[in-house]
Amino acid sequence: MPINFHDKKDRCSYAKRQADSSWITKILEIVNPRGKHVVDIGCGGGIYTRAWARLGAAHVLGLDFSEQMIQTAQELSIDYQNTSFQGGNAISTGLEDKYADIVFERALIHHLSDIPRCLSESSRLLKSGGIFIIQERTPEDVGVPASKEHIRGYFFEKFPHLLDIEYKRRPIKNDIQEKLRFAGFNDIKEYSLWETRRTYQNFSDLANDLRERTGRSILHELNDEQLEELIKYISIKIPSGEAIIEKDRWTIWTAKR
Ligand SMILES: C[S@@+](CC[C@H](N)C(=O)[O-])C[C@H]1O[C@@H](n2cnc3c(N)ncnc32)[C@H](O)[C@@H]1O
Image (cartoon, rainbow, N blue to C red; front, top):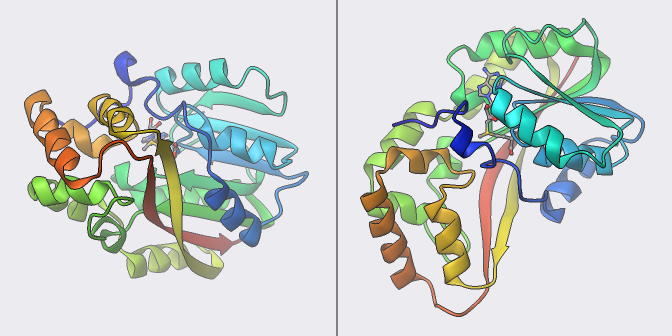
């Protein structure tokens, strides 16, 4: 069953990590957020809202259609004076025209049924000269073979039907570029990023994270028994007792207003 973002039990699924330096380095190559107004759409528990705030943004608004996510984000961001959070839908945010210098959407658009509406809404929110940043995994990113670092690859080795689900929902590179142009964006650029997701002290830490399905909506397509089979499968592939640095490959599109 697909993830239900409104379910209380998953309210911390996109909350407890900190954005890694691999992400920060790439973002700073793209834009200088110092003094800027940022909106983080589909913010989840605010991992990246807080990261933008730490990078010196004047203000970061995290917006999400799940009240559970917003509550979690608010609780975890209590010490961040330059953040605020509110409920809202990516296709119709209710925010004023030209609200932001930077609109950021990470791991959001593969959950949307109407991507063009989301892109034109993002265009409406940007000040002239502002930048739109989308971070997503394409079918090529998802299809990277499994390795000690690319743990997700094992999900598809063990359960190939998960790859079919991913291929159906993941955005295609050229398609996104075309939709961005159609929404009125220009200066469209594309980057690749290997983002360190998390470092685990040993396999048992990783196993616990997988068991919680933390930040991995695709694992909601497996029942508990299948999930245990997957954990066992990965345990055989990965040397036990060593630290594991998990990385995911992403595509980032930037576009200007
Ligand atoms: C995969 S999580 C990513 C969270 C966060 N951006 C991150 O990268 O850690 C996707 C988030 O998008 C939110 N979301 C999904 N569809 C949405 C929509 N139509 N409008 C606003 N938020 C949405 C979900 O509630 C969830 O918090």
